[in-house]
Image 1 (tube, rainbow over the protein chains, first blue to last red):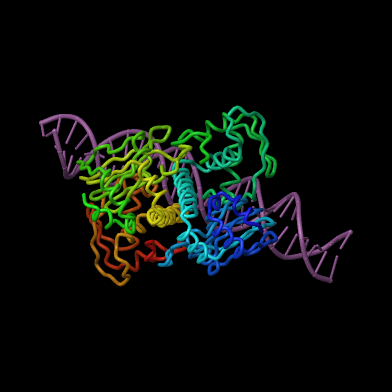
Image 2 (tube, rainbow over the protein chains, first blue to last red):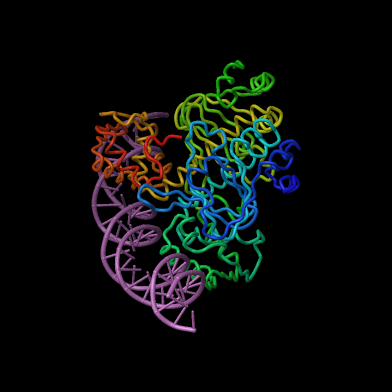
Length: 236
Length: 236
DNA sequence: CGAAACCTTGACAATGTTCAATCACTGTGG
DNA sequence: CCACAGTGATTGAACATTGTCAAGGTTTCG
C-alpha cells in the first residue's frame, strides 16, 4: 500500500507525512471470504479496521444468546475508534464478521492513539468523523421511537436512493440479506417480511426478492417522513 | 468567571492558557428559572452550552407536532458540539428549555471551532468526550431494541445507584418528572405509569410519588440486565 | 379560586413477537 | 448426479407489549 492510498481516505487526509508513513508501515491489509469472523471480542479492543471493499457486520451477544447487530459497514466505513482513549475499558466490545467477500485494512489501536495524540490534523479528522457518526446514531434513535416497522424499512430504502425527489421508476437492490436488515432496523425477520408487504401496498412498490422498484418516490417519502423531525433527503 | 473555572471542567483541562483566556473572555454566563426556552432552533446552531447547575432538556418537534426528547442534561454536561464543523448544516437542530432553575455558560460555536482547530489539547478533549457520548448512544439503542418498558425504567433506576451491588434499602428520587422520563426512555407516559407498577411488583420496589425504595438491588439487577450485553454496573 | 400541569386508570386498538410449519435455494459429500 | 443439510424467507395463529383516547384525581401556582 502506498501513502497515497491512505491520503485518499478522508479520515487520513491532511495527516502529516510522518503519520502517513507510520500508517503505511504498520497497516495490515487482509482479504476474507463471506462468513468469516474477522475480529472476536478480544481482538476488537486492539484493532482499528477500515473497510476497503465489501461488507461486514459488528454484533454483540445478549445475555440470553441473541445476536444484536450494532452496525453494518461497507467501503469507506471503519470501526474500532471507541477503543481509542478507552483506558477504563468501558467501551462495548463486539465481534466482526464478513457478510460478503471483504478487503480490509487494520491498525493497532495503540498506534492510532499515539498518532492522534501527535498529529493535530489527524485528531481533527477523527473529531469530525466521530461527530458525524454520533449524529447518525441520534437519527437512528429518533427513528426507533417514532417510526413503525414499515416506515423504518421505507426510510432505509429512501436513503439508498439519490437525493433527487423527482425520480420515477427507480429499481434498487437491498445491499444485504433481509434477516440482517431486519435486525439492523430493530425488528424481527417475521416483522420485516410483513412490514415490507405493507409498505409495498401503501407506497406502490414492486418487490421481487431483493429487488425493489419505486414508481413514485414522493409517495414513499410522504409515508416515511410523516412523523419525522427531518424530511428526505435526510442523509447526513 | 476565572480561567480556573474552565480549567476545572474536564473538557477544557489541559487547554492552552491562550484558549482559556479567550474562553473566559467570550463565554457568557446566564441564569434561568424553570420552564424557560434557553435556545430556539435557530440559536442552537450557533451556541455551545455548558450546564453549570440545574437541569435542561433538548427536544425536537416531529412533523406532526409531537415533542421528541433528544437529551436531558445536568451539571457538567454540554450540548452544541454537533454544530462544530457542520458546514453543510446537516446536524439536527433542537430547542433547549430549562426544567429546573438553571445556570449555564455559553460560547459561540465559531469561536469554539476556531479554538479546537488551534489548540490540539482541546481537540483531543473533545474527541474523547465525543467518543464517550457516542458509546452512550449505542447503549441507548441497544436498550431500546432488547429491553421492554419496565426494564428500561429499571435500568435507569439502576444507573442512579452507586455501583456497589450489595446495597440494601436504597431510597432515591427521580431527578425529573415522570412524563419527561417516559419520553426520554422512548415510551408514552401511560406506558411508563403501568410499567413502573409492573417493575415494582417484579422487583419488590416501594414507589411513593417520585421516591423509590429498593430493598434488594440484586433482584432489580437480575430483572433488568437479563437480555443485555452488559450487566450492572454498566455506567460508561 | 380556577386553570394548568402531572399522573393514573380503564377500555380498546395497533403493533410487534414468538413459535411452528413450509418452501425455495445453495452448497456439500457420497 | 442426487440426497441432504443448512440458510433465507414467508406465512398463520396465538400472544405480549405498547399506544391511544377518554376520564378523573391530585398538586401547584398565579
